[in-house]
Length: 397
Image (tube, rainbow, N blue to C red; front, side, top):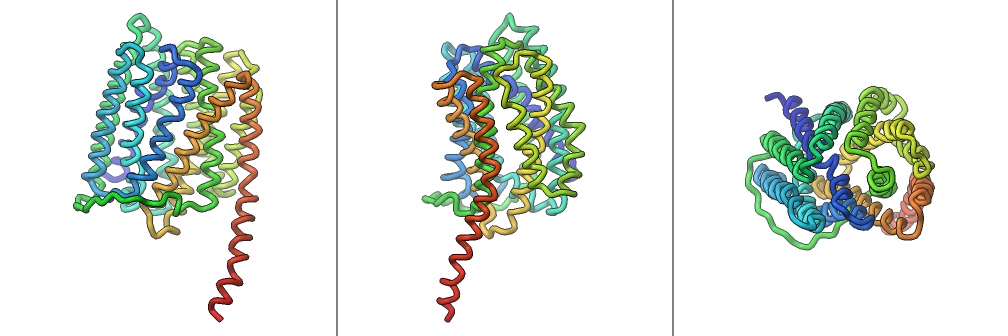
């Protein structure tokens, strides 16, 4: 199998997992009667456990086929436990438990995947591959969300078994994708020695800034679930239309965004996406028109797609500056996932004191402030480096 075929097939299967398993998982948790705090917790616990895995475990594991497969098998068991726990009485705590276990295992595979790809893909092809992977994902998410939304509504009489069936299909998809990528991993055997390690040693200003922007993005996710499901009482099909509209818009505009990255630079295009998401959600809590929400969600989907491609490209281009490559990938993912978890928890805290429209306003302001902090962070980094220069010079004399 050709390298590009293997990478794109894995992307297709992993996105099938996402659409069958995760697209409506938060909706399911809300429909199972979860409180606002539990909904926020369902957005916070997985990335926080991903961060814990990255901080203590992932960076110490060698990049080998055996380690990659072991992480995948544990991940698969956790997926199955999540799917069948839906059938238990009071299933939300069990879902959160097994989701946390899955998060620990999934980081083993996700942190090793970039290291595996760097062995096979040249640096100049990363933007193309990530952009094509995103387009594949958008097409699958668009068609799959539409189909699954209709399926869940049509078979709502068998709730929650209809969700279990969808989740089991997702389990098969992720297992197949893992098996395909495992063939690219080195087959050598290396010893595993787990010791205490210091995280964040390979983090620069850019990594911290991307993580801070992730906090702002993650703060919105629980609010959207609560607003769509609990406040507006939208059906699965209506929520699926959001994904479909966002997918179509992203498919059309992502190639344009890629050309803009090549012409104007990745950071400028990334910044446009971040500010664009922040401002468009500012009045979200006041809007009840489904069609206006559809337009806004389309724009948010485009911005999220640009954010993902830009972030991944920045990560891969920065990798050559770090001698400890696996530690760098782990630290990068650690900061991103910690940002996701912290953002969801902050969102839950805001809901305790503010109405949902007030939360959207506060978060939009915070996201703009997070973005403009980049220049201040870079200036502080340059100032620190300048202060260190005389000390280094006096040591030489």
